[in-house]
Image 1 (cartoon, helix red, strand yellow):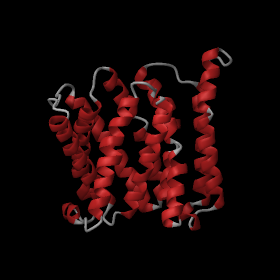
Image 2 (tube, one colour):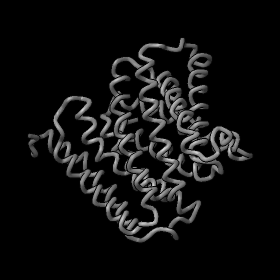
Image 3 (spheres, helix red, strand yellow):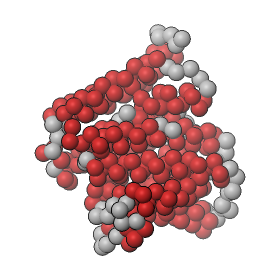
Image 4 (tube, one colour):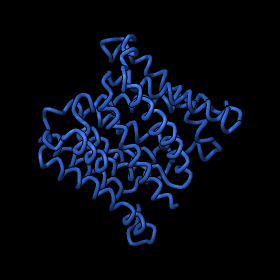
Amino acid sequence: MPATLQIHLLVFLVAFTAVFGKLYSGSAVSLVTWRVALAAVTAFLWVRFFRRHPISTDRWPAMIGVGVVIGLHWLCFFGAIQLANISICLTGMATISLFTAFTEPLFERRRVRPFEVFLGLIVAGGIALVANVEREHLAGLGVALLGALLAAIFPVLNRRLVHTGGDPLGMVGWEMIGASLICLIALPFLDPGGYPALLEPRGLDWLWLFLISMGCTVFGFAWHIHLLRKITAYAGNLAMNCEPIYGIAMAILFFREDRELHPLTFIAVLAIVGTNLAHPWLERRTRSGSFQEP
């Protein structure tokens, strides 16, 4: 199966994260903490007992560091949902490509591509439109934008790690340890309930935690790391800009969020996603010489 099709199937899977997060009755911080802790344990158990491989300790400090960035990203993601709603959160996350247009060249020491920045600026214009018509959700949108910046960093770092021999599932285990550490440190500062908030899950909350941890985190994250062997971080994050389409459709279907949103929000989201989908065509034109990079 082509990598481009695989990344879009992955994006569809990841879009369910927001739905399960909305169904969870506890705080965003307790959700993320349980999510990453369960994912770390599951990933290591899978490597050790099902694949029968020793758990690699090579470059574990770097992977834990990446995990800290991932943990902060997910705290922003679920925090934005609770401050606003799924649709606003996913719209803010659509700026990932704008940030990646700068972070990937920075870490890979190559030139910034002007057309990627241009597309990203159009995305920023769409976000400004959303902010203008959804002023009661500005706090949630701001947190989502911070999460997008963090999401533009860790795929670039993971691509470097996997290209130097990192095992995707083992990487998930170590990175989820880093994410767990930052969540445990942040918990008493971000959740008024403090550490007792970890005892909040009740009834179906455990089902949502299981689905987020196993499907959207262990399986989804290992799949994403594997695909980074074949695609760039920008291409991967570009596909992630289709998540608002899937996620907002689910939010409308399950939670009737269309009643909460201004019609211009939908126009902005479509413009954001459409602009980002133009990237592969522009990239091919650049490689063929139709457009020249400076």
